[in-house]
Length: 616
Image 1 (cartoon, rainbow, N blue to C red):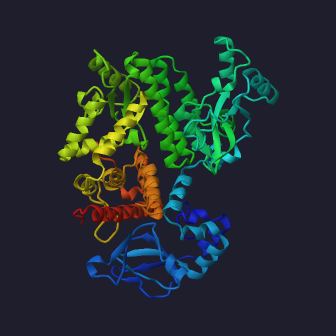
Image 2 (cartoon, rainbow, N blue to C red):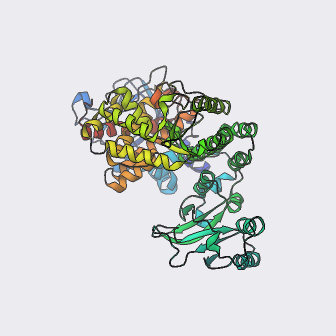
């Protein structure tokens, strides 16, 4: 019996009968070193799976020093495209003595005809392959599996819409009769805000609790119009978004319901109870604990469950981008709550607390060192600021966010200042773009407002855009950092395999994050997350859709493999190591890592051309 491991894609995509059929049709062949196993132009007669050995893929039309384009080792598969296309485009040669399983071409084609998922694997780009890697993490009999493919449209309920002139008394009767908890209020002409052309601005919302408080606590007249009590700050999602994304929005904005849009039109509403009917993971339990925390001890207990929640989500096959979004939303809520429990009024509302680095971008794969800054309103009087700031960073450390080794925290006066002081700092960094100042600009670019007066964060973003827009010299200096670390591929395009492993952060994550950050700085894009920046760059016409998708998926590959290392290090601006040993990866993971690193290499080349960098 052939001892071929079929637990990994593409063979895991076959059913049991097809696997047995495959095993019966395999043969085993020996190739001496330097043997040409499959030559360019040769008919594709077999698909090869390496049992032991190493095989190089060569483009014979290139100069010898550039001809080596691929490298395969134990468990890797090659020759499938040659069978599908009829002939081989490249030469495959044994670099060491090699044993390979041979799958006859006709057997391979028959499996492709009978097993669509198996056939699709060989035509997939990186986006589909990353989904396979996520699926490999999923366990049997988990309720999240159905949830992760559910769309908002499957969960939404019909909205109850009333006119803004409807009285509170009438609204209470409507809620009673319809057994509902909320109403959408449509503003009448003359009451609509100036920006009502945006989805959601023609509507407000009123809940049963809102009306109860107005009638009982505030003594409102039952004939009072809903326009006086309804909230106009609605959180919305699109009908075709994943339901999991709706849960993330509820967590991030601390709301129990979102409105649903499709093509700019109101089509429904989703309440937290609707989501919970699909979802029973620990994520909601943790967020509920955070919101109900009345002191730091309660908040600490909730915070300690966040790593457990992330591991649970990943074990159930949640895609990395969603897991990171949920982690970012929860971390933001915890830090916001800690700010409210720690800082006194009026100071805490006369400033804006910023999260920086991977926290600001919402791209953490586990708990990282705290990176934060503080903007004070001009004229803010805070006599004990230094002591209070130090106390707050100590509180965060107790909640599970270690002190930043680079002292990028509000306990460091360099990361605290009024809006005017911040403007002066930005101007000085732009005027003298040395390595330290460029690093500070990079850190501030990722800043996300999390507590206090959030408009101060928006105004600082305006300053950053104004002070840097159109400065080609600055942009060239800024973008040069993408070349700071080499891509861990050999000259011939195969994975480097040092015994101590390759650094995923330096070799893969940083070039994408900083390269996209550079393009965003050039275009004055306000988004902070890498994926949101890529989307904005596509809309702006600066990046092709295919390239943006590939970069986003490559970032997910690196993040997932980074999570698998079991530990996190300080943010990429601070260095550190985050290594993974290539030899420990499955065939699919090696294939994805190699493809993702090629995407990075090509991206660095495009950036080098755009910003006139010396790229090798």
